Image 1 (cartoon, rainbow, N blue to C red):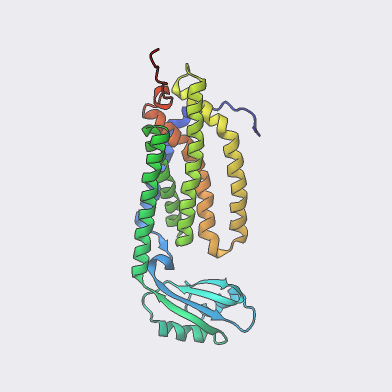
Image 2 (image 1 turned 60 degrees about the vertical axis):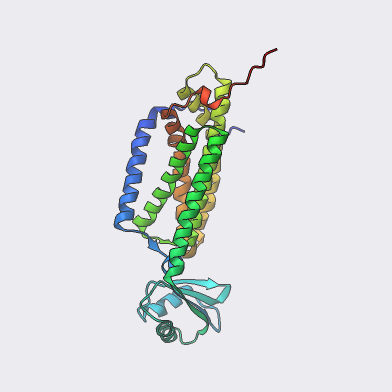
Length: 300
């Protein structure tokens, strides 16, 4: 179903400017990552996590105020299960569990400590290693799949697009210093899947249009393919953005990094599936013969 009718936008005409924009965006993200780094959360750095139970429902702002009086300002605080139980996370390696117990008792004397534990940095290093390994394996598997189903030019272009998207999102985390934890990593992997899905839809339409338009040049075929899928792309992105905006407004600080990463990922992923995955394949020499396999003629 076409919600906006058939469009005739010359996307490939702007491919040079889009390439320049992508390069600037990627380099800027890398520079901020190198200068600022990521504000890694407890999952990656290690620290202390405490579960406290209050005799009655407690407001998180009240807990945060009481902790700040004991100079505990960078704690992650959230309700845990119900309105009487609070989970407090401290990304610190300088204080022992006993010292933290005393600070928490001074700050929150009415709270009952249910659990307090130390998550060492070795766990964080393993998580970082496993995260990088998971992304690399997914990229390799994606390249093989696209190369077998479509063409190696598509595989290379899609991989560049999939590298571009998380680099830009990580740059956003470096600029804003939002906490990057396992929830943020989940958002990053979600964006990879979202962007890849958009890219595969465009690639499939490109191959179909090469069959329908045998006398057209590749640039025209790509433009038609992107315009054919534009209505679907806009509707999918718009509906997803509505959910993400709701998460930003009502999700609270726990989902803040996840929500902003998804918001940036949807916009960047939609852009990259057009101007990186599509335009780069064209620059690499994509043509009809590389997309449409000629049938084998049998002698009679």
